[in-house]
Amino acid sequence: MLRSYHQKDIAFEAGCDEAGRGCLAGPVFAAAVILPPKFRNKLLNDSKQLKASDRDKLREVVEKEAIAYAVASVDNLEIDRINILKASFRAMHLALDQLKQQPGYILVDGNRFVPYGKVPHACIVKGDGIYASIAAASILAKTYRDEYMHKLHQEYPHFGWLENKGYPTLLHRDAIRAHGETPYHRKTFRLLPDQPELDFNAPVAEYTVVKVVSPEETQD
Image (cartoon, rainbow, N blue to C red):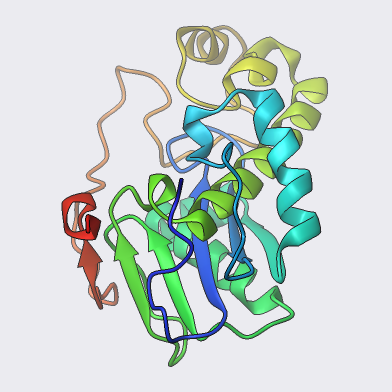
């Protein structure tokens, strides 16, 4: 069972996660979710560990039972303009902006985050498998993005986005070779293996880490 909270004495703890960061096409989506303190669901887990049918079921549960939730996206043009890491954080901020309840604390899946105003936060490595609010955010971000890519598949069926959701599968890259790029492809990404690789580990000055928690540190 996932943990209900990270800071016991702070009300309205929001979990944040993104989906689509490693894709060659389409937007990056992010979600923010505030769950009730006593929320429990045995099925809830990191969205990547679940079947699509289970993710769909959990999305209904989260949207029904959450105190507040929101989903936002940043498109491929903006990703190319500011880079995927900044775009992921911007999508999280946009989701947080839409919450009907201001969070008192933010839990972010991963090891980096741009502070959201003056709200304290913690970066949790593999947090979507540890905290319920992050797992719920991962479910929403993943299912909303999958829906979006299903729509794009109708427009560009050659690229297999119904199955690969824009990730760099062999079918996807073969289609790029055969049909070229679409308006939804991320031009700054390595679309084909013979292109120069991008340095995604380059430091970015404004990214700050308030707290990074490893999975081992979260054990009782």
